[in-house]
Image (tube, rainbow, N blue to C red; front, top):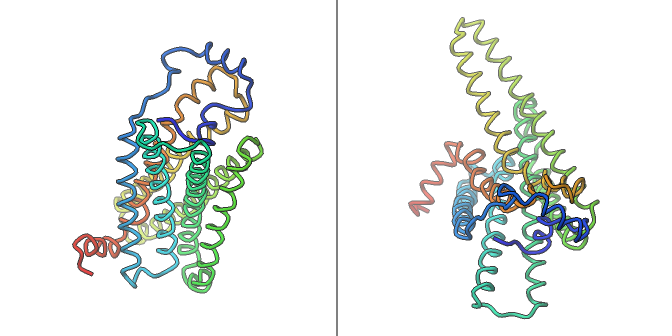
Length: 314
């Protein structure tokens, strides 16, 4: 699947001369460096699954007044962000298929405008998804460490301001990226943003896990139930590994790709890595499919509401 500009140019760096690029490609012309041919049907299928999942999450949160709290509003915004990932992917795939099969014939200027609109949607969804993942981690941290003061710290007004700020920042950053996508400074900002979110989530979730272990150890020592303590600690470690592992696996390759574009655009190894851009794109879409399973569907209240939504018992 070929992607539209500027995402197409993220696959083949613009900051290398054509001669150097061709030499690097020739030097890295092994079978491993031919990339991975991912069918359009897979993009469409994953996009549809993600769209349906996240639509259900949004519908359930809107329907159930018990879920009208900052925590679930943040989860709802994450679902909307993931929906944007799905919608932009579906729009891009369908647009390309219609063009390739001659069903849609438009002027070059119209194609460029469509490119910009889809790319702004993709970039905005990427930034907002990462932002809300970080906000959810902060919200959980406040819930655990400042439980008695949570409702005074995370008021509805502050939650609304946070959500509005993220959507505004995502829109502005996507506009800047589409306008100045050839500037390495823009890529460095995206890379720095990802690293900041990774470190933030890593520190917060590990701190929460450490506190949970401490409490379990205290309870276990009082009740003399070491087996329960070990079982709970293992469960917590597995949950932490899933949270951080999914985040890193789904987002890491794409941002490592950006790092290589900035640092070694003509290196043969880097050129091989660039050829797997579509795989990195698929992983981001997979993250939109997995997010509801991690952040939404684990709530018993939300699952009950989802069943009502699916059964149309409004």
